[in-house]
Length: 146
Image 1 (cartoon, rainbow, N blue to C red):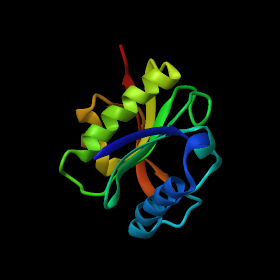
Image 2: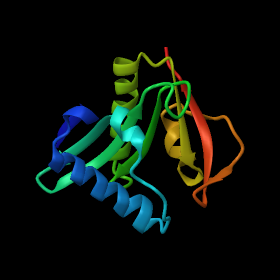
Image 3: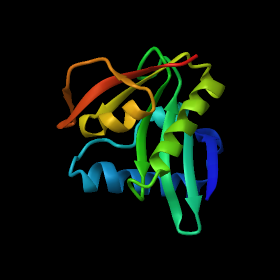
């Protein structure tokens, strides 16, 4: 499986199409949640993904501080095959990317509540009460880095 870390400005049109196709299939169609999935934050993000001959196998984006939060953040985390370690490897790469590209000392996320244990395994700690984002329960979580 190939690992790719690219800023929006250097993504190919085919890569961008594959990313949007996967994100919409999961976050809009699968979760039955109509919302504006493609947003302007994509333009300042690093897009981190795994791909093989079958296409994208995992994806997330890393945003600089000052976009969604004062701190760098990670979002749109997707593993095509779930519960097989791809998501954990992808998240670790996203954390490393936030440190390398944005000098992150802390990372903030808004996690779907059901995924709390996944993020806790990576060291994230819940820092808010549950809230609804586009009709889906979420929590804010933070990871302090060395």
